[in-house]
Length: 116
Length: 113
Image (cartoon, rainbow over all chains, first blue to last red; front, side, top):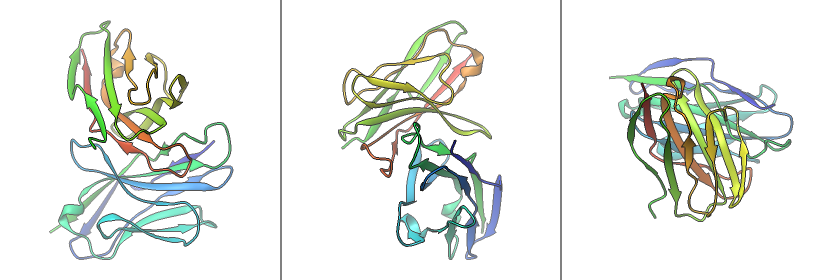
């Protein structure tokens, strides 16, 4: 069965500093990994995804994520945080194998607060 | 393109009442799904569909029914609402393919008293 862990419920970072939101995963086959962001009282917005190829994936709003197969991680990063980045971030995974390969499994979310 | 739309935005039900949450997409996506979001639980899959006439259960299907008669629409039915179904419900759609991105609707906030 596929699973995702986001070990931090909340991350606080000062504006202008780099930010990292952590994600680890478990799958039987190859992982397809996604990051979404949710602003208050809104739906989820897609940020970026890893399918195959380059381990560093660039996405929307200056975010990027690094796929590390040996550590089964897919951490979200941004070089310089903005106050407007404050939101709830979700990591999600699909497994390339198994009956549930269409199912997207989400982590519990990490609340990012960027302090002015 | 309106994308994924959901109605209503907010609903209050009494225990035992029934209702249907509507979801529609205009992107000709084969795959559609329903999630519920609860604090500290992330998003959990309720039901999904890989095409018209095909539905399957997700992680938390009890108390919910779905049908998919057209590509565009994927309604979620609560036959007898319970307080445990108080949640925010999201519908999502994508093209068929495990690497395809799912696009989410704005959500329906449901309160069951």
